[in-house]
Length: 264
Image 1 (cartoon, rainbow, N blue to C red):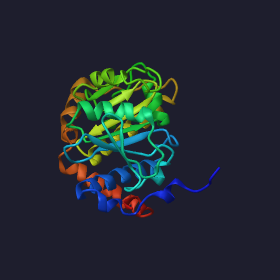
Image 2 (cartoon, rainbow, N blue to C red; image 1 turned 135 degrees about the vertical axis):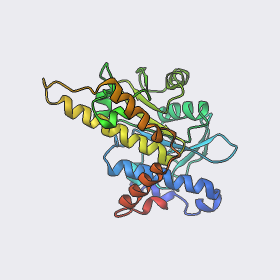
Image 3 (cartoon, one colour; image 1 turned 60 degrees about the vertical axis):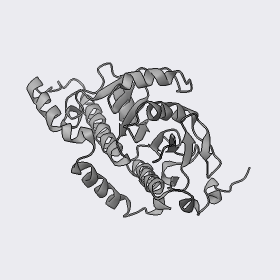
Image 4 (cartoon, one colour; image 1 turned 30 degrees about the horizontal axis):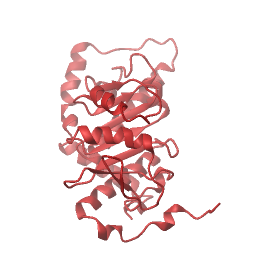
């Protein structure tokens, strides 16, 4: 068995073969992967983030199956079309088919959503397995009140016909909890999708920590307070406000203290 890294086969001239707009999306998506690794949101090689390629073709970018999140870079992302044809596979590793099923469903049905992020974190899955789902017991969680869709578990996402049900369950929302499976957020940009994932992961962390107290009774804010926070959170829902860029820029500064290789 060869011990040569698949990364060694990646061409350094990919940037010359794609549009500046595609390269920009590649860099942002690679940064999202590295940030997820930094925050320990990974499940080894088994989850996936994607982003739509700018242009008339229905292409999106996703990770090569077998690379760790901290190995993802702008050049080694795989370009795939909506029908599953690999348009550009720099490492030759292909993609996770379950990732294709989930991401192609949303990219095919929701042109308004440019990026889709999916995680299998401990606390995210723990909340997904609770009958009542995400509870409005923290500021983070209340910010998602009325904005979370749920999709029932059907097994590993290998059946193409699940895409129809996944899209139906998502509806017009951009945040979804996959029952017994994990979390999914989408957005009008990579930055927007990541901001939503950051908030959703934190809400799940807080819920599991609060429930770990055993018999301690949880406090649920009054309905009028929940409604107030829902209104205050509207600015984050659209994804086109200054808060998204502010959040992303701080994330990139944090990432680049130790990692700039994602841009290659």
